[in-house]
Image 1 (cartoon, one colour):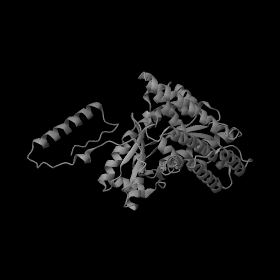
Image 2: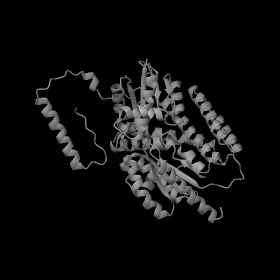
Image 3: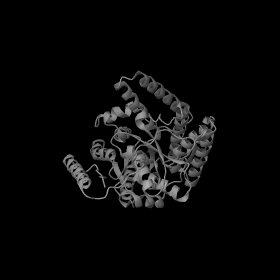
Image 4: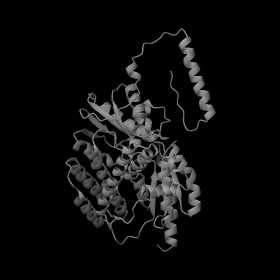
Length: 445
């Protein structure tokens, strides 16, 4: 009673009609002779706290390897943080028991991870869930609130804390030192992943490349937890990865992968997309986690200028400069090993502004910017954009991709994921790889 769901397919007139019908239903029920039910008002509180309670354990969904170093940064500042295991089919089944099926895949995957933890840890009174958020057109802004409601509906009590992109994720109450420690660690893992994607396709033993990545991920996480420097580990990792690659193998077609941030980063949600592409004979680069974080800092600074807030403006400028300095410091450890550098936020937005106003926000402006960059870069053979089924920002990119592909005479394909068997996506990837390999062979490469 009193709940209505509206998706992106509903026209404005349809929304008004449904809202009016809901209001009439509520009024009719109120006037009826139905027995009034006493409500516990505490059960209809729909807010979430942005502040981490250091007296509680924080559980974090395993979105990507970056979750490991984020938890380590929290632990360095006295938070009992735990990263949940990588999601699997059972997690998705648990989530589907309490959802309608229309929710986007990242929502269901993360909800399922929380439910699995609660089912296997009956005594979870001192536990708090962590879920990031965002304002704007993406449903991410409602994840924490709705997941807490559904978890309670399933018979569990898990308070959720959240942090939103509009504050540039500064609202966790752990201080600027935590933010900087976490930022540097995330940038380091971005570069470590780039090493993996750059050298694994040319390694005779793929498992060795994966093992090497896991080894350095946990070494870096340990250093972060202990607030120690780890630049030496990054330099060491570049040498180790270079040694596992066969220098005699011919270069493979290079593909850029962008799109919805959770989906492109989470192996379970995207059916191990990177590995599938590599098995098809491609080399890939995936848009980094730091790309989104730099964008949130940029938007936060823009908002401060618009609101004429001197304090926020100064804070935003300082944060942006510190981020760029730390990113440059990390990048120097990989100099000469990774020949492709991401564009700045301003450069990406300048590219995407040809097609979409930067004020539209969301992942769409970044995906269009990075996609156009790759289309214009002769080192890249094409682009893959990923999105959950029903994702509005992803739909914007998909609507423009075909036209851009024809304009540059390069393939730009869009893949949609909803948690089921993705045979259509596999066919698209196989066709893309076959075309690119044929073109390479014809060109004598």
